[in-house]
Length: 137
Image (cartoon, rainbow, N blue to C red):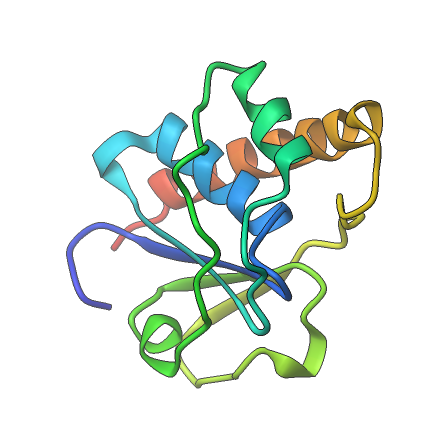
């Protein structure tokens, strides 16, 4: 734990879809109350354009985001690590709370399918934020 506010790291394989959406929603909803990161175990070159479009429909602009590589430091500096399909490729450290969200990968999906994934991520992030803000630090 690096600060008085909770720190969350969202991780998926390519950091081009699910983890980018989750990080964007948590940043949008929490503002400066939560430190938010996202990364991938094998980052893509760019964020999925359908993900960018689906979030733009919600008023969230992630067009400037780029996939980032998952580092040991990012995990160690996080209070909560949310994994989304990276399985054994996600490093594990004692003292870090891990949660696995089973979500469809938006890669190769049409916009309607990406919207459904986006809406599920929105629901999960809202529940996570309520839990984070209710938990004593």
